[in-house]
Image (cartoon, rainbow, N blue to C red; front, top):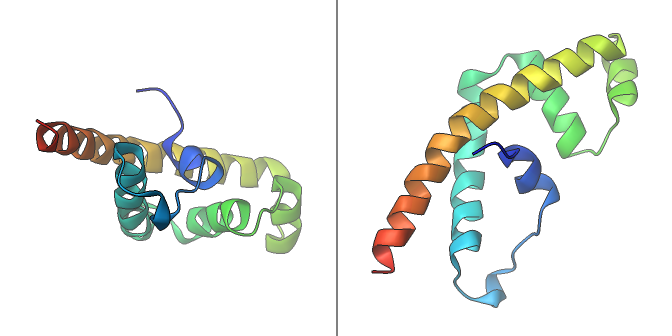
Length: 106
């Protein structure tokens, strides 16, 4: 799996509860539950802050750099490192969730 899971969670389709059950909605809800735990336990404070500014506040790397008093390349490095860590952890969760959903449907 080579896709950007965290990017898909924040920028992909947001599923409404009223839409009913489907596998992709269940995957996303489960991944969104584990994401804060991964961010808290696997990322540095600076990496967490950069990701939150980018995904939650919609800030650009330049804006984040200005807010934090860092250079844009430093912010870029923090974001890329954080995304690599988060995606690496989320891929195991994605696999487990997908396997469970497949066995549930049988």
